[in-house]
Image (cartoon, rainbow over all chains, first blue to last red; front, top):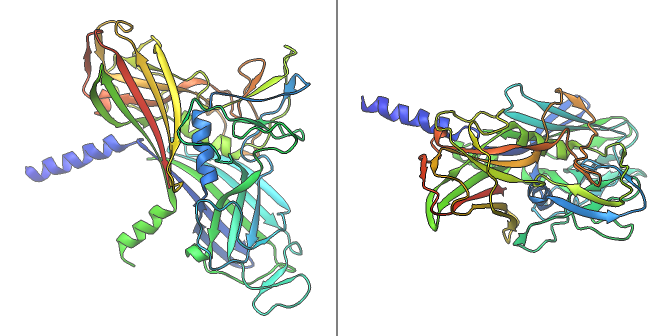
Length: 237
Length: 210
């Protein structure tokens, strides 16, 4: 009888816990040649700050401009990704860029919203594709032109994020910015009044071999394409 | 590997968002605990992350001041009478809402020194006599949220909601909707026999930890 009571209590606790937490996870899939690597990212402070600012923002004055039309921008305005060759630096929340970035943009980027029918899981999925011939050959001992001595050791996803330069506590926040260049306004800050937006793309997520997320690997970009799929998952649990 | 170590490693790769509440009657803390979330809140977060830029929205007002809208546009809270209906993620409103707005409300964001925790606090105060005496069994926090009407999968989303002639939100068909519910039916607190003699205060905290 007492066992039954204990079990019943555990079930009650589980039911009570339902939908009380949101788990945010960044998962990744890296595909090159016949290899598929599945791993998880670490987030930066800029992404977390952006989420809390977005939740608490009401109406953020983004500027006064000579037109009665505008666009709204999300964090994926100009989203991009990069690979890097660092294999020894742990990810810290205040990293705003990869440690040793190979500054070649993906050839194609696809964004996708996905959800489970029971509303328990929401996903923003990004597929970054580098065609063969876009990235350099990266291997140990490389000395040639368009070659890098080392291994692929880090991946980064870059989103429009808040600069996280606000002082805590901040009452009744209203952080907004015009991104200029026909890109619209975004409810993140800071707002600058010249043509240099306060919300450029910054490192939001890093996947690093130094964090044991994956084993660093040699990659021959002259002949192989590289696909990097990143999923920002919001699970209600 | 030791399962506990596995769990710890897994935890390091996750961020958690929790909604917590405190209910005060006058100066006295009546209850505290965790809210339950709705689909509209979760969907709004992923929409904001995945959205590029919308097409141009034109206004006829001639006003050229532009405002970017966050989830707390027109935010508010309500109390309700229901004591028997558990929360489900597709609830867009309280079950038995007492449609009386708080007399005062404010928002504040905080962060920890090591950037490992970010927090927003929304505080709602109903003065004495604002809500008539009755049983209170639920509270709702209402935010400016998507209607979550997109079909999954939705490729390369780019849209906006224009709630007025100067403002834009990077969300689909956004409006003020239930984002979090605190309910006696879920065991969050014991129903309140509210006498209306003292202020009713709801503090709602969203913590993001990683």
